[in-house]
Length: 257
Image (cartoon, rainbow, N blue to C red):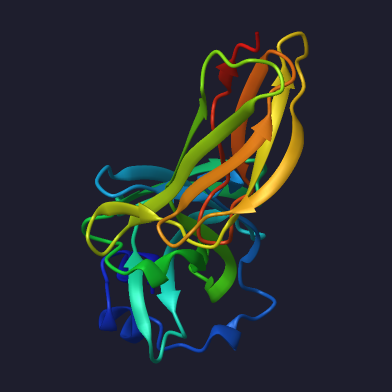
């Protein structure tokens, strides 16, 4: 039975019927999966409108060689209840490249459309990787959660240091805003209560140093003051969370007279 083909064509409740065989069914004669990769191991970041296509792959081995490999991503409590997202491959069949007579890496692509596939903000974070492989002798194996991959809500960050220019010793106000994609209304909203670093680089230096850390307010806004001392660049830097990627602004130059 080609479980891969069955699952690739399934979605929602049909995924459950396609996986009726318990994950522990694999025997020593079945293919062995050694590696699964989504988007080259990097987090997948989606905004509010633009779809993104990522490459996924599964590496497996068997004495007879590998016929095919497949995977999909699912989100929710488990496959029996609470399933709220399934991302299936674009292709019916993977492209498999043999590393040896027994081992191959099979690749597919998955296109994720935030307007269709990501309809809830709670879908940001870890997604389970359901994966399997089929050997040339017809034996197969699969895992309903071999590993996880992370899908995040795109973040944006702004900075504005003023006045420009400013007299030495006077106050500089550094304002900005941290926002992120909302998959439920397809807009960007302020990311509240998040720590953001204010950093400074002298005009004659290539290195930024952290001056202070402040938190975004109830609208995602940032605002703080510093004393003007030398010419340089001010920027904000956000380290990111499990649901939202890190982002750093370009430096805003302030001329100190």
